[in-house]
Image (tube, rainbow, N blue to C red; front, top):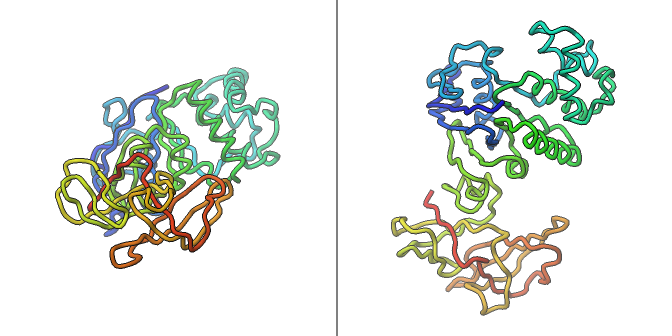
Length: 347
């Protein structure tokens, strides 16, 4: 069921508007890659091109190294699950899942037997003979997944299929995707604007912005080693401290912090994650500051701090701590990166 998928210099324009610009991305067999970005960044257009529902203006889509440009969508071995389940209302649940097998010429009995194995996989065999109108939103999306998987696709594309579900149902669907990956090991491309969903489900994340891939890499790499300020922001990073690079050391209001080698000396931003900074006693950290605000996130708290520069407070920093941070607004504190080093970007 698993094949490689490659986008080779894909561009797509609608009139004078360029939606995708020279997008190149490789998804290895059995891997899950999340396309992460804001609405309008080109994520869904890229999926539609892969599925054969749209044509690129230039570039190629390769499946196992074979160019599938011009191949009809039904012959590509690629299944696409949309945000809306789009079930056939006149068919029962089992007949919705059996639809592709019936269209391929299988008998009703054989197609239904095949469909039932996928309904069992998504834990819905008990509702096989219900109409879609009697299902909950989460159940409908499970049926849509089962119907896509019953096609035995080489590649599974998921276009924000869980975005309309509440948080509890989304977590249930995330667990289901993990079960599907364990059972079938499909190649998956997931479109989402939710960085937490991308981090929970994917092996790697490709960040799209204005039709361009800004960075593609493992989940941890994008969080802690963003290529640009935009990637840092899209992955939820709250800190970008301006300063000066001198010999692989970033000098700023946060102190002198060692960063990755190879950058040119000059202005740069230190992108240190909010959860990668410790609050310590004044004088014990690389910098000191004054707490300006506290924001509860439930199990965690965001602590906003004005850093103390040579001429008074100069920059702000956000630290995320579990539970009660044990500090109050107006208190002077020390700050220290948890691993003693940081990551710098110049743009």
